[in-house]
Length: 146
Image (tube, rainbow, N blue to C red; front, side):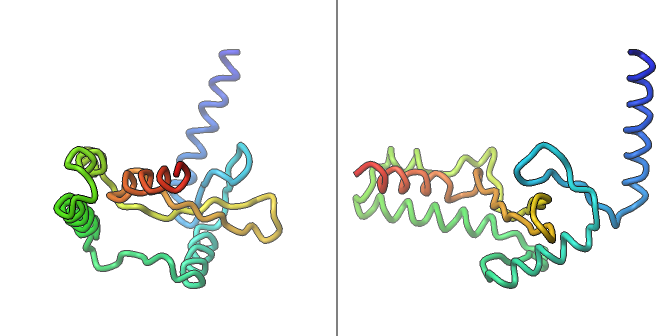
């Protein structure tokens, strides 16, 4: 058992070294399953860019300026306006205000669908800590519980 663990440890170390020396290779969890895609970084980047271009729903940030502060400011301004208009209470505003301790910009990542021909990608938008998350949950609850 101990020798088996040593061999496994050596194998993992070897794979780590290989991946560090090969920036052209990417390792990603796969869609619908327990496993990993190990393959061409360029292929995944190309497919992701192709998806972004096709949908026109996403934009890569290339100017170094993060829009998180603008998004936060817009949410706070909207909530203040709703309180001023007496559409929501101050208590509701506080509940809907983003938590500044774990705030992050929503972002796109993709999971390879290795079970499909051509290995298409499943787009995932991670936005659970985005400034609009609490408002989104609130509106969803209003729509689903009239």
